[in-house]
Length: 138
Image (cartoon, rainbow, N blue to C red):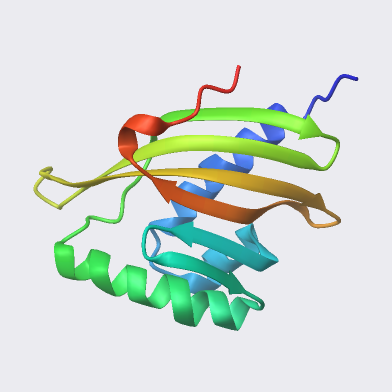
């Protein structure tokens, strides 16, 4: 069976990473599925609503990034996308966050499961992982 939405998923993730740098949770929240499952080194969280995602995920992350001097620009250094079915896609990517002076702040890698909804592709699960372990999906 052939799926043809890899470009659409890639575009959603490119838009997401661009909007993420706005520090505006209200612009970022529409990219997430409700509920959203976040798997990180510190644990697993199932965030049922946009309010939960903002309070538990975005606000603390934005505070840490601002404190660290992040210049709010991000782009994928690497992004792999594979559509798994008509309504499921997996993506794995790496971003390099930099301070205003260009110095590297951190490398962030994550793998995402996206689900196609009536409102388009949404991030349903995200798992943070080591930068060297971006999945090869093609």
